[in-house]
Image (cartoon, rainbow over all chains, first blue to last red; front, side):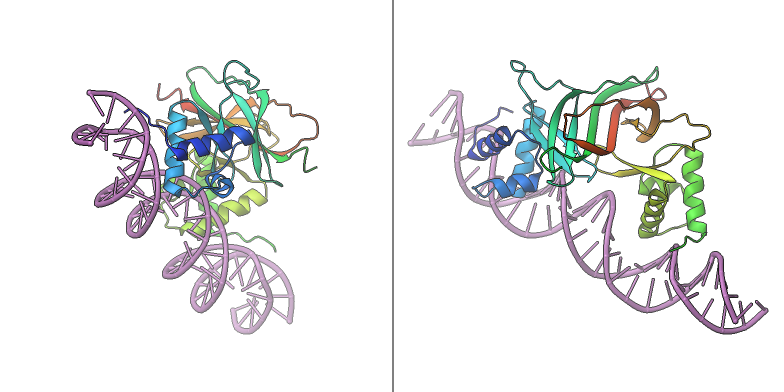
Length: 124
Length: 124
DNA sequence: TAACTTATTGCAACTTGTTCGCATTAACAA
DNA sequence: TTGTTAATGCGAACAAGTTGCAATAAGTTA
């Protein structure tokens, strides 16, 4: 199933690329000038995830947040990185800090979801 | 407000202590012989969290999981530790692996929520 | 042991995040 | 220009978690 370009996809991706932070569906919906349906936003975002254009983080509030993956050219953010969730301004950003871990023998890690939360530099 | 001992609290804590893993509310509810209301289970668990008896993890499925905190005597699990979620047997366990991280200046970390997911040794 | 205070429970209703079915619309290739 | 089918909007459905309230029961005090 080949992908098609639509105004919705473009608007969402533009927004994510500009803010640079990880955003929840309702944050995206609010910041968009155009009105896009809830379900559509989720579908667009999940498609981006499948295509490796954005990645999804689940914070301790149980909500999904989406952020663009940094392209390999200007790779400032490693594949496995920490995320920082500011409980004051309610934003989530990707930290350049890579996640190092080791698991006991026999365990296979397929995905990681690491979120540090607290107060960011702008709010402290 | 002083805490009271009730059969519900005891049953939930016993279960968590025995399995040693982090469990979701519905897993707890299913494994209990006694019938305890959804809301009650959440209230019991959240009270345990407040009292520092159990800790809460939010996995990438957006659900809350609760596990007993290891007491300081036999401290095998450090305060900040990784969690491993097996997507096959759907269990979450605390790993002895501590989480090491550094944040940019100006950031204050108050809580961490780190979950690795994949296949555990029993399922591989 | 009886009376009393209030933490705890069960129930039902509610909120919120996310997904799904389906008919309609619109990319884009032929 | 036409045809295929991916993408959308809408409403309903679903699930996790919370909340209000009246009823129950722990544990303290008399």
